[in-house]
Image (tube, rainbow, N blue to C red; front, side, top):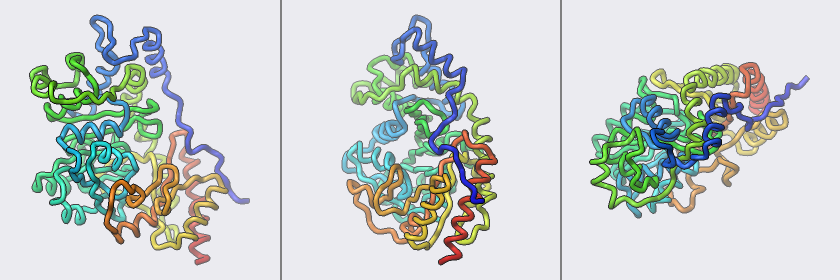
Length: 397
């Protein structure tokens, strides 16, 4: 009998009871705006920032409306101006080049390796084209951060890390987001903590932090932050930094604080499911499993594999046949964007030069979410379904 999976790839776990209780407290008192606090009250957003700064080892943290807003704010804070070129991954999601375009800058795309990380040789060849790198740890894959930072430091290129898929991950035990000048995180529903939308930004640089707070729309209420620089730093930037409102509210912060306290447990659960999928897919004919470096501690909230050098028709047939058996796979090689998948040449507001080696990799990337609503047994079943359909198609070629 042909096996079939019946679970949902978009159903998240319920919000934890303690987060619901915290949200109800905020709803009952009605002080949702982050600066609307009672006398002696810190506010949920300020506490969230303080706690996430401590969790990541950062001096400063800012909570904002989305991960995309965090990236755009970081770009503005480090001084990116309209017309500037900003280096970034060719393999990423649309909010990354979108953040660059939102400040009037121009993405300069860097290639991807078969390990799905930024191509450091290609980066080395392009470091003289820009003074900022917006590095996307796309789908949770972290490159050799020691080599990358040494290269960028030598070239005086400022690194901003997009950690939308690496909250809770690390490279050589340094948390993702703590290598570059700024780390940006997402709290959107499909990320590692869920407030529907939301973002966090961390840095050790007091002036970058002060600019980011002013950019987010603090007016002159920056003294109510608990993970921000001293008032003296704000004196240097407050009159020359525009208000581009994008604050997080106390309701979302209340939902996030308990989830962040439980992040380590959730990471372990994701990785159990990821390993079940990885084990089930390994040694499948025609399929390449992405091996993870020993230096990387990852969060397996999604999994990718490569069907390198397959004909488009055969690859699409695998995806269709898996879908018929309840397994939803996404393909990054499609010439037209579908849902969240798109390629660097899809973003026509960002001119790009051909990158044949990267195009080959993108054409073979198959991607799948791994919700925590799946069990390890579910993941083993999913792997068997993918394995059988890939093997069938490979043998027929």
